[in-house]
Length: 85
Image (cartoon, rainbow, N blue to C red; front, side, top):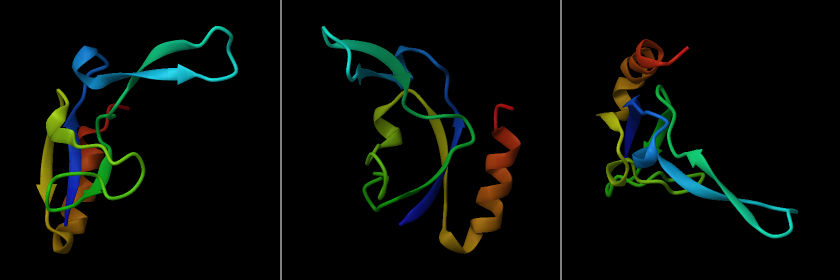
């Protein structure tokens, strides 16, 4: 497993999915951003998020960097550097 930092993620088609708006009749969908710049997540050996939604950054139009767990401090620092405040 690795730490993954999303270093570039624009709110565009390549980083959006259709999210169902519940309790709305008729059903309606709206685009929602898949990843946020600066996001830090844990991925398995196949590059898939191990918790949450099971997202796989390589399938989306985002840039990311992988870190070993021993480099947690570096991963956190990188996340802070690229965070879109």
